[in-house]
Each structure stands twice: as C-alpha cells, then as structure tokens.
Amino acid sequence: MKKIRLGMGALLMLSAMIISDRADVILIYAFSAFLHEIGHLSAAKLLKIKIKEIKFDFSGVRICTDERLTQYKSEIALAAAGPLVNFIVMGAVLSFFKAQGVSLAEAAEYIESFLAQREAHIYGAIGFFGLSAALQGGVNLLPVSSFDGGRITYCVIASFFSERAASRATAALSAASAFVLWTVSLYLMLRMSSGLGIYVFAACIFASTLKDSDIK
Image (cartoon, rainbow, N blue to C red; front, top):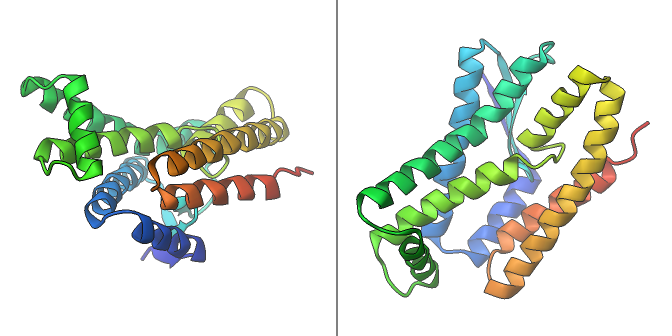
C-alpha cells in the first residue's frame, strides 16, 4: 500500500489559498492538479514503476519511487506524463471553445469575468480550467529541482555528461527559475490583490532552491 504524507508546507499553501481565493477557484485548480498527478501515476503503471510514497509538500505533490530509476528515459517519461495531461486538457478546452464558435479573445473575457465575479457563465469556469491546466503544465516544466522540469533537465544532462555536471547545472537553473517564478507571483498578487497561495508556493520554492544551491 502506498504511503501518503502531508507536510506542513502543503498545509501552509492550502491555508493561504483558502484565505485569498474563492472555493470554486480552488476546486477547479485542485481538479487540474489531480489530473496532473493521475498522469504521473498512469505512467508509473505503464512503466511498471513501484510507488513508495505520495507526499504533499510546499512544491505540491511529490511521487517517490521505491528506488532510483536506472534508465533516464523512464525517469523522463514519468516526469513528463503530468504536464502532458495538463496540455491535453488545455487542448480539449480550446477545441471546445472552437466548436462553440468562441474566439480566444472572447474566452479571455469569460475567464476575466469569472475571476472578477462579474458574470457567472459556465464558459468562464471552463476557460479557467483550461488556463489552470496550461499554467500547471508550463510551471512544472521549469527546470526547478523539485519540479518535473528539473527531473527532466537532470536526466538529459546526466545522460550526455555526468551526474555531477547535471547536479550543478540543475541547481543553477533551479535557482534562476525559482527567482523568476517568485517575482512573477509577487507582481500578480500586487496587481490582482489575490493569489496569496501562489505567492506562498513560489516563495517556498525559491527559499528551498537557495537552501539546496550549495552542491558539494
């Protein structure tokens, strides 16, 4: 049976989201994140990779395998499966709007109205679902060590050079990416007067990369 752990970082981020965001926004974002993890678990099942632990922490959900994967291709496939599901969801939402004759500009207006609570149209919720999926997929592909992109970056560099070179390069890219993510989250929070949960998430990631940046 898989072990599920809930860290203090996850509770802190969830508390920040509850304080700053509406329940429907949190539920849509959480469902998108759930599909992301389903992608990882499905890939693990197909690749016959045993899952030791599912941990909820400040970086989201972390799936830990029984042992380190010896094949970089398997590691890359496992890491890429989550963002892939996010982009499939985004594509499905875009296809839905196209079938309904809704342009991207109109979809953006529906999403803005939904977030501003100006209009309770179902298109706004659907659009935000697609946007959440796209953002989660894109953010998770950033070369941050605790993200899917960090795992992919490490495996690609290690396969061509060495694990030491991969560790150093990933640490440098991780710190730079985490700083950009934190800066953007701060701007969005100040601009929209919301998004505290995202800011806490980005700040924790940035602090974590600074802590782990000293590679021996």
